[in-house]
Length: 102
Image 1 (cartoon, rainbow, N blue to C red):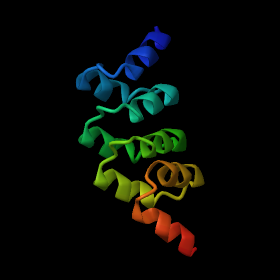
Image 2 (image 1 turned 135 degrees about the vertical axis):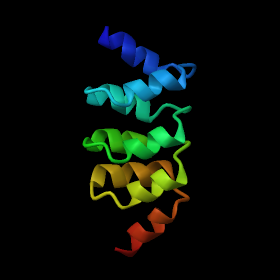
Image 3 (image 1 turned 120 degrees about the vertical axis):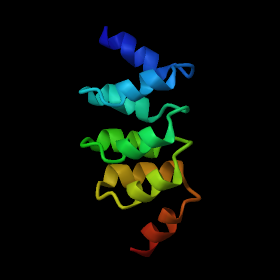
């Protein structure tokens, strides 16, 4: 059953209701899979930036449609994994300039 949820979360046609539900799963793997979904709604992203797992936040940072508000929160994240993911997937972001100054 769990494998089918992961598969569904990877499907680009999965509806937003299902993604929202899976974003609150106890499974880090499922939440991280949802975090990179191309159709993740902004309000779900903005909740996920506070996820207890840095793996989930790093996955969210790699989302190509990351909202500006979510980007701003992740840019302040103390996790090197999250910062690296943000810089790798958003090379035009101001965070790259800030990282070079440190």
